[in-house]
Length: 262
Image (cartoon, rainbow, N blue to C red; front, top):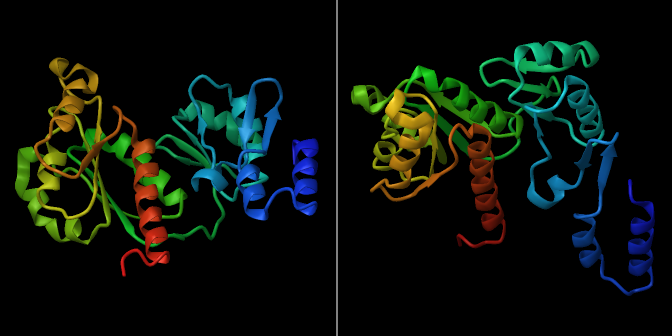
């Protein structure tokens, strides 16, 4: 532990009957972080609190800083992710961490076990309105897969050719959560929400002509949707949509384990 005095005090309180094991466990969730040089404090207990480990935001960090944080996280987590990593940054990271993998469309650099597979029940569907939305959609899909969820992809089914979407309505029916990624006017989530009986997470992208205002038009369309059951994340936030989808699925599992659905 990186805070031995706090941990020792906590254990002493349990041994002396001053604190119950459950109360100690709750405190332990907020105990452990590790300083990395003089530029970061890595949160090793985020998984205990939230179910997901800390993920590295790449922009603004040097390759050297990313490498050091990845090393620290990898001591506690089988999968380590860094998002928004450009190819030239990944090339420098891989020189120091040869096992690092790069998902070029998603711009994610990760350390992943060779036998990594889905660990959680439920399936997340990721849909895009157009091919230009793929970087954001792949960020969502790869994040979900590296978090241990099964993902199904459906690309380029925007409302300009609605028959493409309707042709795959069986896939929409089979999903447990849907992430719908769209730029331009951002109409696709509303259409999908009218076809699906699961939660819809809408992701506006910055794709579009000048009047789309770098995704603001799509964001406002999604926020003003007349279809029920849609939640909206920020512009280009594929990562955040994947984490939200995962939390929805994990909450369903927890409720079933409590017998809530009986």
